[in-house]
Length: 110
Image (cartoon, rainbow, N blue to C red; front, side, top):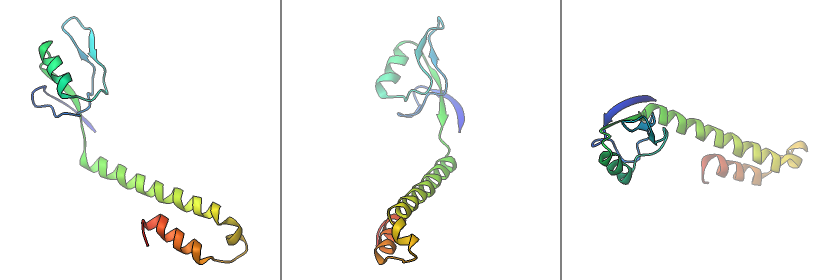
């Protein structure tokens, strides 16, 4: 994730502000972390704000976060299944239902 200063005219809608936007007197107009909307951009332009610092989304970081989320979701599904089928698994039996549900939960469909 990096911070980029850009003209308010070309800043994309839904871009996230990296720094607070201040007026010429140092009063905060918009807090850091706020998403830019068309209405907010026009309001800032009327107040004389010409440039903002936004968070530049890194495609690699986004893909890594999605991958990490998928792994965590799979681990949570596996843990839940082990809990639900704990009595059958303790007895040493492997239920066909456990296998079907496990495949469905971890792969998405059968």
